[in-house]
Length: 329
Image (cartoon, rainbow, N blue to C red; front, side, top):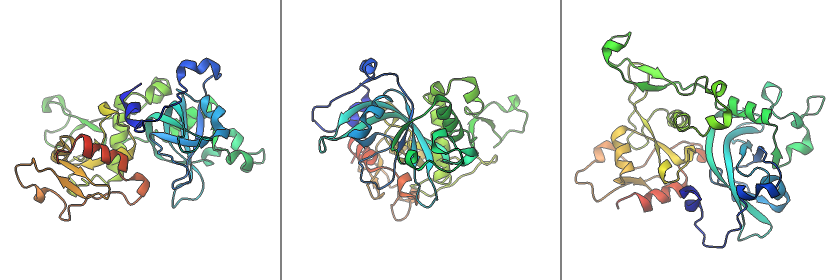
């Protein structure tokens, strides 16, 4: 079991694990759609776990160690949308409700944009009748299996946008075909990769995931440091702000935007070393181990600027981890 899964299992109850080792009993693996509605009655935490009733257990079992796509409503938008992709790990019985279960997830990543279920004629064939109208009964299913071609089409569309501000690769001025200074050579690890490599290999590739995480965080925070409001843009239009993981990947963190925040370089350094942290209501915490006053570097009200969309803000579970495991109070 990975460190990530160990971190997820905060409760001490005896788990019932249904893992890939016994997949022969469950039939072939299958990709699927998981319906998720913000503020629903279910105890979902999209990047880490999905809560579901027993009626969907057989369907969820078939997805184990395979990929799922999130689907559902988005606040302020009409219709239903595909919004993210993740891989299932194992299933546990809900200790509070014996007829409900959790399936735990890894390798979560947000899409570049929400995909309307009907765009381009629709991604799932069974969602529509022959007359082109939505198939009402099928759309109500919270877990539904996908054909491989449907999964690929959804994920390619969801992760296909080029970064407006690609990663820079600094080279010697004499090696460039441009004057020295702020000009930089942009290198995007995203372009063309879906063609070059199988999609399931691509979406677990760290350089690709790092590029997507950076792209999403910079866009979400408008290229502005959440702690200082600093917004530096270089001569090629690229932002200097960095995408910081709250729970680092090497400590089991994921690439959800809720596990990220945009920080300027110096602030990022202090955050990673536990000299700065955040409360659940986004008040900035400064460590007593700081041997100098940094208030002039931070927002005057000592509160981080976070997205208006509550579903995109740093998640309390990740902030709690940072305060307990990193912050030097």
